Amino acid sequence: MSSITYGKHLFARSRKIQRQQTRVAYLFLLPALLFFFGFVVFPMGMGIYTSFFNYTMRDFDFVGFANYAELFRDATFGRSVVNTMIIAVASVPLVMLFSLWVATVIYQKPVMSRSFYRGVFYLPVVMGSVPVVVVWKWIFNRYYGILNWVTQTLGITQANINWLGDARYAIWCILAILFTTSIGQPIVLYVASLGNVDASQIEASEVDGASKWQTFRHVKWPSLLPTTLYVAVITTINSFQCFALIQLLTSGGPNGSTSTVMYYLYDTAFRIYRYGYANAMGVVLAIIIAAFSAFQFRVMRTDD
Amino acid sequence: MQKSMTREQRNMRSPYMIIMTVLLILVSLFFIFPFYWIITGSFKSTAELNIIPPHWFPMEPTTMHYERLFVEPSFQWLLNSFIMSLISMILVCIVASMAGYVLAKKRFPGRVAIFSLLVAAMALPRQAILIPLVRIMNTLGLHDSLWAVILPSIGWPFGLFLMKQFAEGIPGEMIEAARIDGAGEVNTFLRIVMPMLKPAFGALAIFTFIIVWNDYMMQLVMLASRAKLSIALGIATLQAEFGTNYGLIMAGATMGSVPIVLIFVLFQKYFTQGIALGAVKG
Image (cartoon, rainbow over all chains, first blue to last red):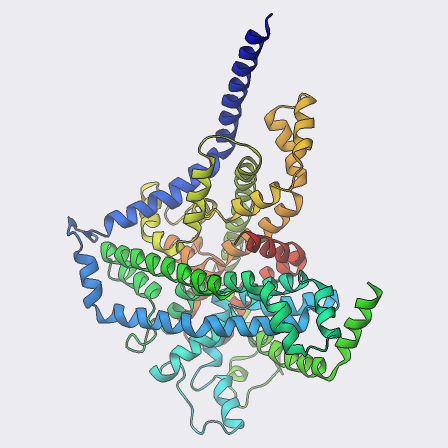
């Protein structure tokens, strides 16, 4: 057999192997793709498509951009967007600073107490939003809640405050609970990445007489930046999707003062059954989240 | 090593560290208190629940709220949550490990396109597809069944990333060696790849279990009849129906949170590993 035909033979053989490999790869991917297309991509397409329809229990009429136009005039939607922004803008720096602080305190502790604290701050996440919310609802109760007793005993307040029923306080109560359910994951992430900071560099800067703050600012912080970015993004997304808290605690009240986009979407779809309008909200929410994430990426990237 | 140990020990005893630790303990109480308040509240009598100043501990413990809770199909709710979480957990592990393995270890046309699509989907809010999902489940005749919660949880590509991340660490020579020994694709996957992915399975399993257990929103839109509720949904229903009967609601909340917290404590190691790993990808 001449070397040329042998080469051709090899080439054909490797092509055959490649084809077979491709077939195997797609067979392994098949279940994942089936679920992904069936329960993520297809519903997403459906959501976008139906957002251009007046879609209710009875009707299904094409209305073009009418749903989107209505969103801009809808005062409750505006209020919900503002609340969602407030929640995100307030919770992102708070969550970041607090979880970073906890992480710097616990990452040098012995393994046992480190995982104890990690567990403690993860507790509200693991318990699930429903148990967390029902107990806070009791804590905040105007007459039977422990919070009014505590604040009065400490002399901070005089009369019983209707924490959740008063538009001035309700959103802050929600923020406080959201905070307790948001910091578990950032702490785990920060502890992990603090462990990756080069110990010899820290030591070198201490030998050089750098203060604790200087060591942190110039040695640890730069290597924490990717984690910080990730924390900012997931905290933003979590705050944008804040739903269970609102639904169980205030139902968006009083007077829409605590409604968020996610809650308003749910309310529109499952209480007044305007599916098309609600889907338009979902699309807008998705765009806002994508824009925020992109913005954060840009800000953090140019920082270093 | 010796040197860094002493440095750390010195750090631990510094006044700065002591102040910080005290602060940390105070803050921790704030995070533990709700859990404590749920459990103790479930054993207080109705009179004791409404006393001001509040009792920090039930003085006359009673099981009256649990007796009332068991009139509801609360064991069924708990069982439903377990079944949903368990089935999702198993299916996610199988589906994600198969896909993650080939995305990490095989080169084939369409690989980059598929992967980019999955990444893009991760950034989108899951809730934006809630209404279409309800519609799909209605069409499939699965609405108000546990499958309506299980199936969408498998479509979400998070587990796939975790598995891909992990599978990239498997040495290619090991897979080649198995191939040369005459093992087929399926056998290679079962005998070589799966055992290597063990830590990732631990992380993904516990992660999925907790996520599905606590996926209140999906449960809320998918489950309707009383016997089909999850425990989270059951508690929410109790609150809607019994308002300020805090004893009953706290008994429900105890039943809903204690099992999942125990599971978390048992598998915490895998859980934290998984989160740290998932973040590497970002």
